[in-house]
Structures are given as C-alpha cells and as structure tokens.
Length: 485
Image (cartoon, rainbow, N blue to C red; front, side, top):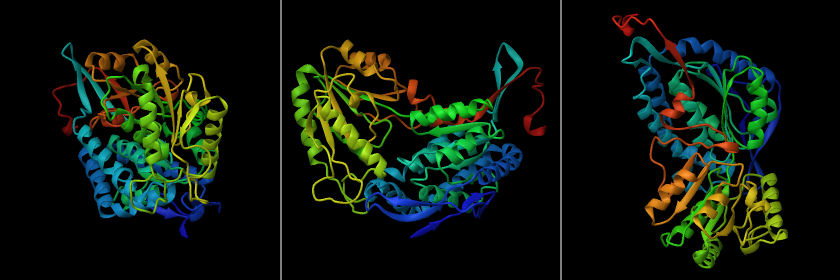
C-alpha cells in the first residue's frame, strides 16, 4: 500500500502534528490503495504561517519570473505525465485511457491558457484619456486557501493554483481526501520546479477539519472552493466573519435542449456526455429536454446508446466508464434511481444494482429515465452519477421555462440547426455557460455559473483576476518609469 502521510509545508515534506490516518479507497476494488494523514488545526496554521511569510517576496517577484516558475511546473508534469494519469485513475476510478486522454491533460491545457492570458495583463494602466494622472493597479490579494474536489482533481487544482501563483498570491491547497495522490504529485512538481518555500503548501484533510479552518482563518484573504452547493454555503458562512473573498464553483443540473431539427448525432452526443466520468461532472447535461415531434425517437436512441456503454475497472484500457468514487456516492445514486421508479418515471436503460457480472466495486449501470416530469426528484436534484432524465417539451418557450426552473445555473446546452433560435436561447437560458451543437468552449473561456452553482469564473484572464485586488490611484507621476522606482 502507498504511504503518503506527510504534508508539504514551507518547501518541505513534514509529518503531521498529530497522527490521524485516512485510507484512500480504490473504487474499482473497494480496497485501500493508500494511506494519508488528515491534518489538524496546528498543521493548517503552520501552512498559513508559511504562506503569509512568503507572500511579500512572492508578490514582489517580477511577473516574468513568476511565469518561469509556472513553466517549470509544466516541465515537471511532462516528465511524469504517466504517473499523474495512474494516480488519478487509482484514486477516483477514471479508466486509465480516459485518465491519460482527458483527466491528466487538464494540467497542461489550463496552464498554457493561463500563460497566454497572463501575458496580456496590464498590471498598472491608465484609467483613461480623461484622467492622465490616474492609474489602475492590479495587486495580489494575499494568502489564499484552495479547496478542490475529487471528480476532476487536476482540472480543479490547476484552475486554482496556477492563476494564484501567477497573480502573486501564496496558497494552501486542501485537496479532497478521496483523491489526494494526484495533488501530492503536483506538490512534487512545484518543489522540483523550484517554487520558493512557502509559496505553495498542501495539507490533506476533510471539510469539517482543514476546510473549515482555512475558511475561518484570519490570515487567509480568500477561499476558492469547488464542490457541493451545501458545502459552498457552509464555507461562505465561515468566511463571513473575516470578510474574506469567496469564489465558489458548485453543483449543476444542466438542461440539454434538443429541437426536432437537431443534427442526427445530438441525442447520442448528449448521452455520452452525460455518462462520461461516470456522470461525476458538475456540468453534465443531466436533463435532456426534447421537442415533442422528435421525443419518441430520441428516447429510443438514448436507451440504445446507454445500453451499449460498458462499465469496467479503472485499470483496464478501453472506452468504458469506471466506478463512482465511493460507497456513499454509490448508495446515494441507487436511492435516486429508486426515487425515479417510485415517482413514475419510465426506466428505459440501466437501473438498480451492480452491472451484470460484477459483485465488487462501486459500479453503476448507465441509466436513462423517460417521461420525467418537472418537479420529480431526479429532475430537480443533482445526482452526480450516470443517470439521465428525458423530458418532452412543446414550444421554445416551454423549453426555456423548464430549463430555467432549477436552483442551479452552471451549463446549459442547445441542439438545433436554426441559428436564430440558438442565439435566442443562448441569451434566455440562466446559466454561466451555454454550449451549442456540440461545440466546446474555446481556450481562454471562463468556467462558472450563476445562482446555486456559484459565481466563480475560472480560466483565462478572469481566472487570474479572481486572485487580484483593484487599486485606484490618483496623482500619478507619468514621467517616472515604473522600473526605475
């Protein structure tokens, strides 16, 4: 078994102040694959002290030098990419090919996009031609606490740590205790890239422990959190006492609105997107809204596609989906499937229990419900598993009403060959992102939502600006070169 009991604090791997072992479970086998330590308040405080001490020098480091350190992190990843893919696959159950192709590559994708955005930032710029002696300065906010989830571990670690470092902030990362191995490998990348001591720190722990301690800590100026809406509310309350900035990327219940004129692969694309990562994505299109003339055929296609999706161990190569992350998640998903049956939705694929031929591991059958009515539990609540709800609609206005009738607002989707209709819906859907006709958002586009999905904007220049304070300055002497000060 892998032993990873230490924390990375002030440039070194250190033992926890109090022993508190926590097993990391391989969701494919239900066996412990590693052991980590859960931090105490003393460990959290030590990491914050280190970050606070390192902040003045790091904030004063020229942007070009901060950029070189981040490039060094990328170079370390490129040397050890297979290790990263295997760590993610082991800890949270992503099939190894998917981990290599989609999970691990989140690091270089986002890092390179951040560097592009970073190069365009004006750290001190004129307010405007009407105010020649006014300047707007962008300055790092200070020590930041970063709390990341288990479902896309490197995606979220990269979306938080890299912009924080580029902005000039020092940080304490608390990864999910369900998927800590990839983050500990990331800490090695930072160390081997020469990131100065105290600039990046990592303390493993759970939400009620290290997560709450960071959220309430008076020397932490900002919390960036990705996870459940319930936990996001608790963090906001804890952070309010110290008036720190809080950015939240939370749950979702995305609507995929499919009109009768959609392309022939729209339904299949939507099902596969939903089942990707075993449905464990906050931006999953979990509600498929289909225009009535195409509804019956769409249900047939969705059932066929879902039934064709294989489920298997994370260690095996192939295009299958893996297990969900843990027993609690598996049981919760089973409860939702039972709710769907009890409330009268029509089960057309998948269902309760383990897939055929499996008796161990947290595997869920790819499940599709048809004839789902607005207000049913499976239509309202985020399931976070491979369960799709299909809902008919009559008119465009009907579709918008159903899609927006949710507390969430992360990503919605539109499938139609009518460009004017697509553009209308893109403006009318209440979400932070809208993707249409299978077109992914481009490099540098922000990721984030509205309402109960949180209001973070991660990625591109927005992702860096979240870690910056805006300072307004008057009486600036424009005859003095900044570099000469």
